[in-house]
Length: 126
Image 1 (spheres, one colour):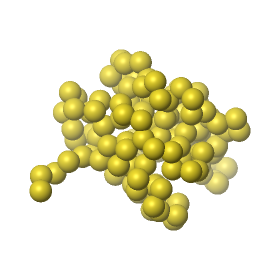
Image 2 (image 1 turned 135 degrees about the vertical axis):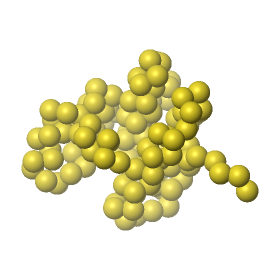
Image 3 (image 1 turned 90 degrees about the vertical axis):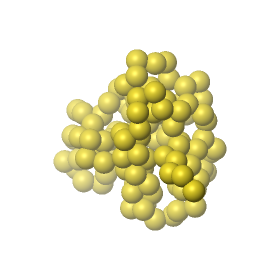
């Protein structure tokens, strides 16, 4: 079987089957890592199709924020499916006060738009 990078749909399936938050984040970081290694012309294919709803609004919105953030990196409009996924109450994935303050300052625009406050530094470290 040939290697295939994780798509946003694959990521949603992993997240829906995993209850452990730390493992969920590992899947998110793995998605970013696989995305980074793909040639630019293939990267867009990894986030364009709408993933299924996983049942936890915060994580469903996180997927939209990631897709919009990656689309912006290619100077593309966000995928249509991302528009309806927005939190009414901001989500700060980290419980550490310093990380929350960092996220307020450094969260990428796509993440802030969707109500997810995650620092750009956390995305780079992924």
